[in-house]
Length: 423
Image (cartoon, rainbow, N blue to C red; front, side, top):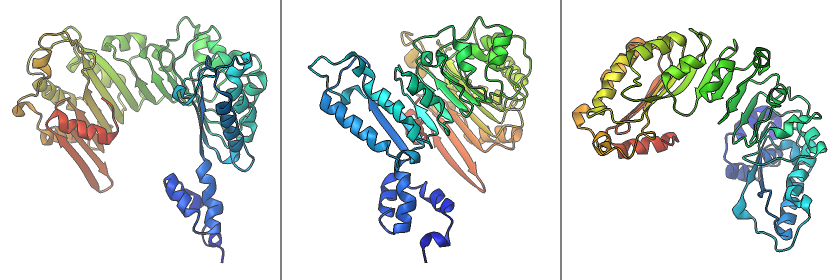
């Protein structure tokens, strides 16, 4: 009896999807039925290695890249691709000694977008800082991708052309490294009427009319980017997740929200606040923050000291933990609290004293801290407290708990690496 007759193909694919590529290749050699099922999983991710627009590559390299692209665009391969990254790898390319035609600077990218109709299952496209100068057919092919849901771009100028249609299926859009910020921004963003997640780095939307602001991403659920755009996206009734980047002062957040006193729909909040002697983040600020976001289930709070707050910084952290735990919302499921010293003035003559390893007695008693937090937030399933020279992590999964504790910077670094975090 055929192996597939005993088990639905959909369940086999779900099982195989958890295997690493090497295991999939080995598995596909064990049985013809398994080969038919597992082999396509080896083509779910495709990376096109491009070159800088100013570089004219050697013909033999370009020919090899074009041949590789033609393979991935084959009818038996392309429909299996779910994720594609166009990555600019300067070191992979050798500059040609001969003068190339002007059109050669985009020949590989243009060929990829001409082949796009074959990638009928493509769900995610990441251009990875690539400068796109698409032909009209290429733009049309991008618009018509039937399965495209996630799109990352480093330029949006190309989308301002009149022939660019809407992207009704795209629910995740990331734009970073924007070289040109045009007056067509509203027109471009309105081509994504059903966007759920927007990641927008390094740019601020200003001087828009109320009608223009309300037209942007009307069903947005997640916003990641600079706090200066919250005056637009914070008003969305559908918004549940806010992740802000780059340190800023707490009063700036209140000012940007323009008088909004409560955002009850927000359940996820990640914020990095700059702190100093003049700009503290203490009891009043905590109370205001929790009043503003009363229904949080996930809070990621980063405090970024910008100057010397005096000796005993670790003791101040312990006091802050006690104060914070008494004001957190009872709805909280996950808490991440971190002190980040990347903004600290390295010219401060006392920086060595402040960042020196603290006395053991100054390290927080994590059992006590956990008791504080659980008493206020009984639904907590994740706690991360990172104070540079100490770290505490506890994670509950069903009936078990996993805990990691560090009382020195080196031990804390090991845990950070295990968590996959770069601090």
